Amino acid sequence: MDFGFWIWDLGFWILDFGFGIWDLGFGILDFGFGILDFGFWILDVGLFIIQRKSLIRYNVRIGILRIKK
Image 1: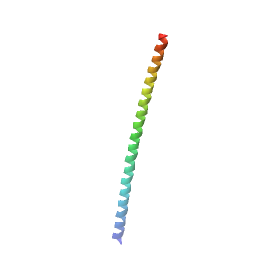
Image 2: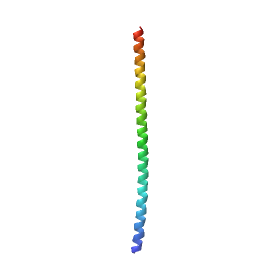
Image 3: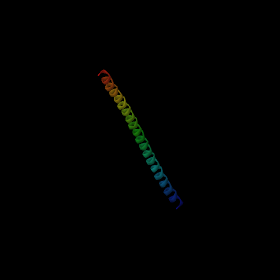
Image 4: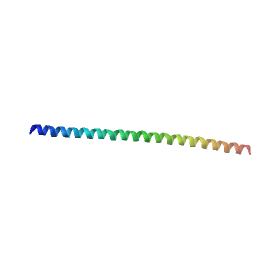
């Protein structure tokens, strides 16, 4: 009887361990999505900076054209 409970316990421990690994997998997946998000955020900031620079260049060109007139 005792031995049966011990095997039962071991079964639950293995199940727990399995869920732990499963959890870890989701944690790693989450971390991956976090890095992906961060990458997109950097991309967004980069595009914003590029847009700002081109906007500044555009305004400078317009300004030069106005001065020439």
